[in-house]
Each structure stands twice: as structure tokens, then as C-alpha cells.
Amino acid sequence: MTPKLSKLELQVMEVLWSKGECCVRDIVDTFPVGKKPAYTTIQTTVYRLAAKKALRQAKKVGNVHVFEPLIARSAAQRRLVDEFLGMFGGRAQPLMTHLIETGRLSADDLKEAQRTFQKLREKGGKS
Image 1: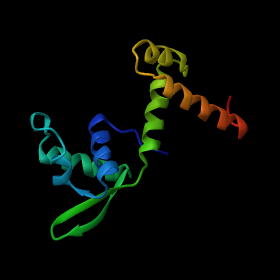
Image 2: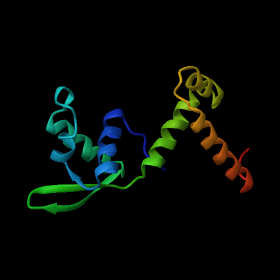
Image 3: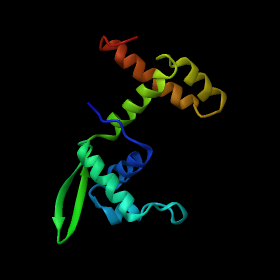
């Protein structure tokens, strides 16, 4: 099962998903100057993620530990979406309406969703 991740944990994971293997300093350096957390904050977050089995130490170069993700971005996203939909009683319609009304859901997004829906239907998935 994909672990539940905090906002900062997701930000750290996003760095690993985007860049691949990183040390704590590499992760810290990706944050904007005005919003850069302390090195020790990111270090603690990385070790918490390791305890949750979201990432692991891939290697050690001198005294520097290099980490890599163990969970996929898509798995973490699915977990977040499922939790979020739970706030709406599992119904996606209120979210879809909001996305359409705010212009965050494009015609291309709808077409892609329809293609995915059709593929799942053909495989005998949920409809």
C-alpha cells in the first residue's frame, strides 16, 4: 500500500521523481530561495520517507547519502485523489464541476478522460 505523504514529503518525492537519485543537499537546493526549508528539515523528512518505505538510500558517496524513490508518482497521486474524493463521499462529480467552472479542465482533458474511460470499459473495468 502506498504510504500517506505530507505536503513537504510530496515535495521531496517530486524532486526524486523528476531528477532521479539525489542527496539531501540536492533536494534542498531545488526549493526557491524565500521558501527554502532548513537542511535539517529536509534531512528529517527524507529519513521519515525512508521509514515509510517511500524512498531508500541508493548509495553512499564518501559521507553523502544518495536516495531514490521506491514508490511511483502515479501511486502517490492515486492515493491523494482517493483521499480527496473521500471528502465528497467518493463522488467525482463535484470535483469535475469545479474544474470545468474554473477553466482547469480543458476539452483535451475531457477527450483524454473519455479515451481512458473507453479503454477501461473495453477491458471489463468499471463504467
